[in-house]
Image 1: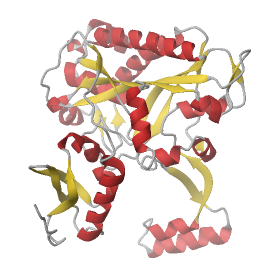
Image 2: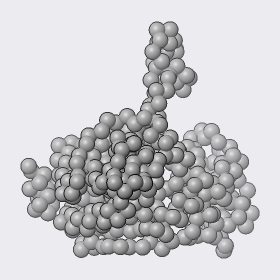
Image 3: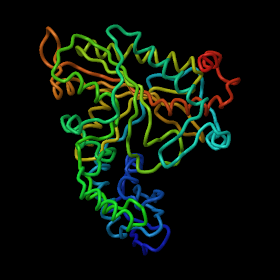
Image 4: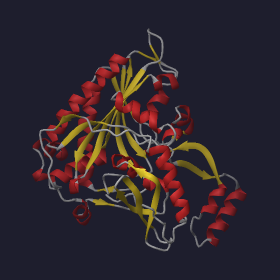
Length: 405
């Protein structure tokens, strides 16, 4: 089937693929569409006899890309990132006692009740009840971490030095998530120029103003474990568990569902360091405790083998190794409208971070092995209120008591 791209003035355009894409790879392409161009508001797959033959794209008003450029970019990503992927049937390791159901999205009513407020895309303000629910859920996960031998807790700053991510080549695998931090260059002439341009622009920050900024080599952390690896760089460890809670930031290209995909979110993360056997066993113990917690919360959820959403030339090999070696598990909870979201991840890193950050094994020599567990607290709370509602009288007793404390 030959498809001719229509004029860009149409609200919806059809972009042909250079050759049909197997339907089994739709999901891999779908993960990347909104990172390909900010002009894409929505999309649908156009299937033919041999697979996906084109994309129907709904564009934003006054898009900046031409159809030809969009077509070229999409086909580049398909060939470089998607077609090389293998298809996998989800491997489920565990399923909760509660089975899934059909629940309406509680968010609109929560907004009307003043429990949450969305000040902008990807951000969410929590009121008293949701604060107490998130804190209760965090206490349960924290207790698992601190119940393990050789465990301790730290509170890290938000800003993360760029060199920490440069050191482990994060930018080569996840450039689409990164958020840099900058400031105005500290010079009186620079401030005056800024004020003049700001006023000339109608007291608005325009792109030209950022030429007056200086890079102080910090970024917002995509997750908390990098703080731990940076803290322990150049040290020797026997076996250790470090847990922390903090703000993390990942640009996700579009935010529509409210609480299940945030730009600015909170993670409770726990890092294991030591021998390979110790790290593997620590993850197993944490998994079992997390499964018990999910059942205590009365959540419909499951644990699956998963992979990260890499973007770049490392995508093929990284996904393959994560899947085959089962380095990443995700705890996936059911939410509104038949959807599901990952509320927790359980990861093994091998000796990668030990080598990169020069974290050695005390007494044994060689790089230490690491692993981590991360829970997205807003996501976990969203899954809970989706399945149980936001009236505490309808919650499991343990949660009612914990939230009331």
